[in-house]
Length: 108
Length: 467
Image (cartoon, rainbow over all chains, first blue to last red; front, side, top):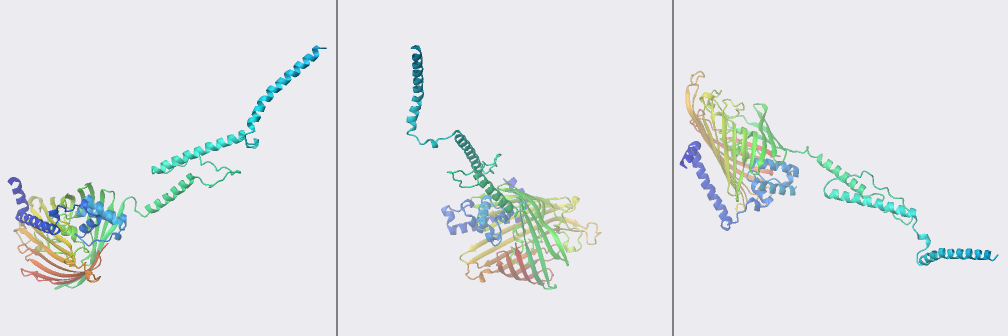
């Protein structure tokens, strides 16, 4: 294990190791705090993409980078292109991609 | 003479018997006929043949209809029978003709109408592929202390082509004013192919996957302030890469793990600059790949909850002349938290990114021919930004809910390099959103440089529109 970890640590340097550990800890803390607030972890009901609606996934994923645009901004054919672009750029899962595009098309 | 009457009698008797034999059957037929309709209702041979012909024609017509229905059910176009539809029989007495057209002609007419509509709809699309011209435009004004104030404008056209469900092309051209001329830059030209649901390969020129700000936030209608933060944009990292990347996402329950890995042309090392402060910096426009090095890098992002994304990116390569190449390592960490808070009645954007650039020990101007050497040093720089924006989207006022105050701190540490100073800035901004993708931005920037460099505070205005 040490043979693997040491070269990696040397390769990315001390700042990288420090930041990765700090970020992992921060992520874990924020994630726990957010979930405890909603009680989802305790209840074991944190929803995955398969359990969310297209509208919910649209709001959650798009707003992470920019203001959400109305489904009426584009035609169904245009949304297909936009969503392909977003799937590649922002790493959407196939479930998210499918549900969001269905929602956007239904609202045009 | 007696024989003659006997012969006559026998003849008469025989004729009588014969007459009876002939009459009896007809009498029997006559008795049966007494209970039947009159002789005028009898079917003649000609009528029988005509009825038979009509029956055969109807059978053929029924078979043709059955065939048409089957073809329609299968989604195929009903074939027009080789023989035309049976000609409508001439109306005769006692027969009613409801319509002069047959079901085949109705189906054919309907099909022709559908075909016309299909053609008209298809004419609205550019071929079988799907194309979209998107992008953004910007107009701005900057008044920076120690410089002449100026207006500027830029236009980025993004060409998106969905060739198939798996194949996609993305190109971006940037037109902007620079040094009193309009320049054109090819920002992106990437072909992407979805290998499977969770892995995409891309080749060409693409935005730097290790740099979150560049890939997701640098567009002017997305970026919250009129200018871009130090270090992470046009500073420590390349904006785009020329090579190939493999990227995707791994859903882990309710969380997601993003990944991107790439190989690309390595940056060049500036060893003979016109401005000495650039000595030891990296040339990210090394499209010809002078030096022949390859950069390898990537980013891992984690989304534990929908509101939060954190990531770590790295790029590693050799830089400099082939026989004196030195190590270059670029690293970045990013933090992005966006939440629609009912408690604060609005949308909160909290973002931060920090980066490090390391260029190994290199001897510049080793023989002194350039007049400043030999000079040997490691070029280590770092910097980044933290930004907070709040938009009161839940407030029931159509004007106030579109305002968005922003505060940003950004910094670039490069005191111990030929640049010779560190720089930090505080920027206060106020945005007004006309639409979700159109914004007016105003900001004031407080600049602070150490190492003897002059501070350059700035007032900036910008209008940005995404489409």
